[in-house]
Length: 251
Image (tube, rainbow, N blue to C red; front, side):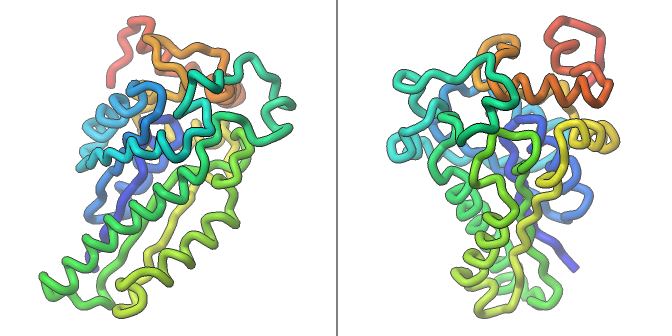
C-alpha cells in the first residue's frame, strides 16, 4: 500500500524531530519548507541541511506575500514590532505574543494538503492505483505545552483543520481517501521532544530555533529560552551550541 506524505520542515528543533519520525512511516515523503517573508533566512537554510541529512526530497515554497497580509507580527514586520526578549515563563504564558503570525499554520496546512492531494490523485488517476490502497499524510510540529500559547498550536485546531481539508478535497469526496494530519509532539514537553529526537537520531545540531538570524542563537528570545530549558530539563547539552562553538561533534 503506497503512502504519500508531506512533513512541514522549518529547520527548527520540533519540525526536525517530527520529520525524522515521519520518514519512518511514509513511503514517499516530501519536506515542505515555506519562505513566508520571515525576518531572516537562517532557519530555512537549516531546513535544507536537515532535509539533506535525513535524505528527504525538499520543496521550497515561496509564499513571501504572507508578509504583506499577515503583517501584524514581529516575525514578518520587525521594524514595527520588536521581538520580545528576556521574558519569564509566566510572561510567555500570559497572552498570545507578537511573534504569532496571523493564520500562518492555517495556510501551511492548506498548502501541505494541496501538495499531498496532488501526489495521491496522480497515483490514482494516472498510475491506476486502487484508492483503497492509497494513504495520504501530513506531519506538522505544533506543541501545546512548552510553547508561547499560539492558538494554531492547539489540538482542537488540528481536529477542525483535518475536517476542513477532507470536506474541501476531491481525494476524500470522490475516492474516500483520508488526508490524515499528524501532530505527534503536540502534548509533549520540550524535554520529552528532545529525548525523543535523540532516540530518532534527529540532526539537532543542524536546527535553528532563535527568532534572530545571527551566527549564534541570541539566548534571549522566547524560543531560545524554551529550547534551553528543554535541554536543561533533559540533562543533555544542546548539540547546536557545541557545533557552533567548533567542537568535533559529527553530523
